[in-house]
Amino acid sequence: MVKMQGIKLKFKSVEQMVNNHAIGLVVLTDELETRQLNIVCDEVSMFQLNLRSRYKEQIEEAESAEGNGKLFSTKYLLPEVLCSIIGYMTDVRMRVIIKNVVNGQYRAVIEDTITGTTFPVRATDGVLLTLASNYIPLYADETLWRYQSVPYSPNKQGIPIPVNALTTSMIEEALQNAIDREEYEVAQKLKDELERRKELDNNTTNNDNTNRTDL
Image (tube, rainbow, N blue to C red):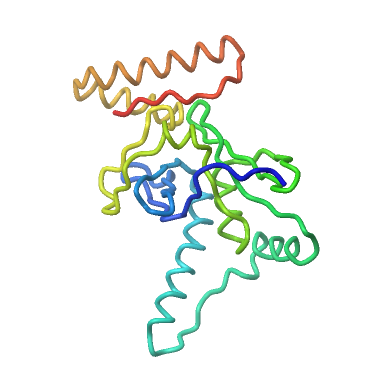
């Protein structure tokens, strides 16, 4: 059996960006909720994650309430059904590991914990898979966690996002906003990140990005 390594994570929430409702922010914490990892997601992923988050909240509310209200169930949705089939018909044991971040996109793998075989997957889809099952845990690579995580902020206000975890379009928009506000130090950091990405593209390399700069 492959030795299990990494930081075990918990899904906390998915928050909608104030200035762009088509973009969300997935908040993951370690088990002790001391630090968090924030992953930008698209509108489709935000809807899918929110669907399961709301269902969990409904169940918790129903268990603490006297009434037996009718709840929407996610168990008949395709990801949940497929996870049930895999768990019933096979002995495969899996976990999702968020491995690195490249040009603003977190990358993950689904790992067979018996053989160590891995299958690449979008990080947000990996998170969704763990929510859809009751047996697939979520981990972060220890090096990634060390560089990309920030202290946990339960009040959900002013969540910091490392520059290298932003998409290129988000950096370009933030750069223009920083210039308009005459925040030249912030603008320089954003410009440096854009230049770094262009250099990586020109060199056609696939080096993992673990250098973090906070705004």
